[in-house]
Length: 394
Image (cartoon, rainbow, N blue to C red; front, top):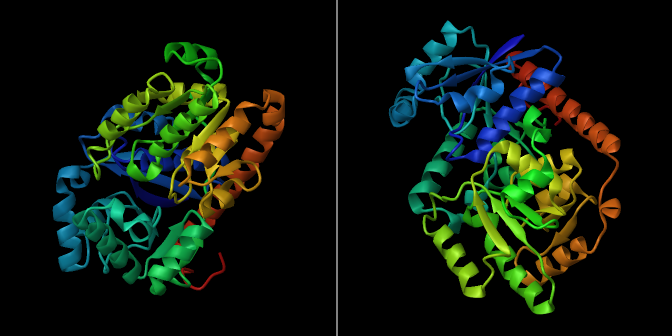
């Protein structure tokens, strides 16, 4: 087994990134061919709840003060100045690491381990207005450093590949596109859908929007669409859960709440906040549809989880959503409240029998996606460990 080092994003600051890696470890554990052993390095301050989903053997966990969040700046400075994060390298050697999976952390251009750089998306280049100047520069410098250091680059979509090659020409020939699939945890069916709807005071029929409240997730569009539907005499409730703070736009939540109040939609657009994962899955299963109005994605985790559960999808018409869901979704213009209202209205009017595939077919399709995902991850790590990094066909 190739011992591969990973770090874990803060689950409160980057819910999507955290879920991505938890999902990867669980998928490798269940569907892998025993070729890769994930070893997760975390700081001593990381709480037990963050690691609980992988304590069943999905990954080996190493706590080290050298991976504490408080040392992030000094580690980066060391990597930039000396060319190598020497403390990280020392810890990796102690644990017989063979390949390093680098995410939101730069180890330096002279780092002595074969390294894969996972870049989630290129939002800062496509939507620069979503970032402060400082945040934009931090991300840009990190991406440029990783790509210039001859890292292998792993992306989740062909849409991201097009962006990467457009903005960073030096990445050509070093990109592997690996779309991820969702390995649902045991709690995905632990809580009853009806019980969760009652818990959150939701009607029998509702639309669910499980995205953290960040500007590019475009919750504002759905609020405006509900007003359009109200004028048409269509009564629809949207439940929205996820982290409530956008560190780049700290006033966003107050703005959304104010707009909901101004339009009199307090009972139609429900802010649930960050809720237990078991409840998220229960609300997904009970929803008439999952809606994702985002104006930008690398590859959407809620969309993938909805596909795994067989829940109908209402998606913004952006390239990556078309790539991800194909013909198994209803699409709307992410800049038009009328378009979103039309899609929601059409979905609400359908019966459950019309909307959903048989559970057996859904499970079979998702297992095929998971097997393909894990196979591609294992093959990439094998290639990088063996030095077969460049100029391969994705």
